[in-house]
Image (tube, rainbow, N blue to C red):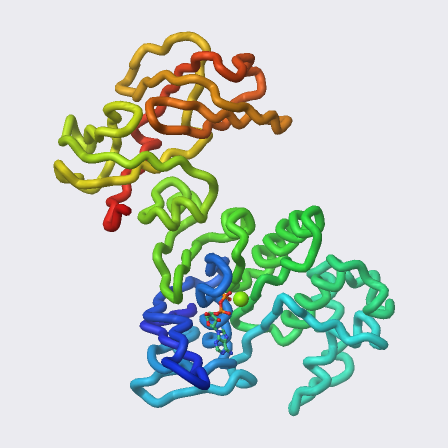
Length: 371
Ligand SMILES: Nc1ncnc2c1ncn2[C@@H]1O[C@H](COP(=O)(O)OP(=O)(O)O)[C@@H](O)[C@H]1O
Ligand SMILES: [Mg+2]
């Protein structure tokens, strides 16, 4: 549906070299899918989205939608934004005051050159207001809506043009936490029920994991990994991705050798560790092993190494009770590991604790630079 190939977008600066805000960005989004650009502030998400919309002119690359090229440096094509028929909602969405909810949603149709008939506008607007569940408030002054309702109205206004593609730039970021979580479900429902191909920009990893069919993680203008939420979470390819998506422990180690099919032994500060890896790890290679806190199983009694699991012991350095789970800091060898466990754990600070870590949950990432 959407295809972005080798996109580069730069900003000129008054002095010095241009800012390379998007570099060699490529991805494909099938029809009806929810695709997210995720990364820290300044990594080039908005630039990429604005380039797709036609609000920025890239320096090179190609963008096509449904097989129609809307930008191509090689072919000299640049379709202006108003002719791309994309719906957009930004972080700073503007609801027009002194206008009803209906008038706000109808605005994009009213200003069209080929303005539809009154009846068509009525039907379309009531249709999108129903989709975002605001139809019962159609006659209300738009400023008398709650934050979440205003957000839904901004979405309705983007949907009324029946866009081929919906572009959303951090649309939930100025809502409070509770509302943001509620709106996640709303957004997902609206996207799914209407089969909308959506490109979503956020720096919030929880939002990205909850909403997306696929996530592209960006860093310094480039996409560093693309995949479904689970794959990105379970198999981060770089330390940046492992660290940015969720919480993780890193153990620096050195590969000792292969011990079985897709099994490798790694020397770490807590002892020898068996790691599962589809890719071959060569002896002597420096690696960081990423282990999620929820994958370190704790036990107050000694553990047997069944099924090839990694077994270690250490002492509890600190515990933090968080209601439905406990975060436990465990000192083992020269390392400190964080484990997330069930609140039934009764051991406390200073106690000996045993750990079990499945090799499948140990992700070895090659260390290219080690300080
Ligand atoms: N209009 C602009 N002029 C110059 N530099 C810009 C402009 N907009 C963004 N940048 C720079 O481009 C980089 C990417 O910005 P942006 O795409 O807004 O990132 P994100 O949306 O991921 O926070 C940043 O270094 C930012 O400072
Ligand atoms: Mg941005």
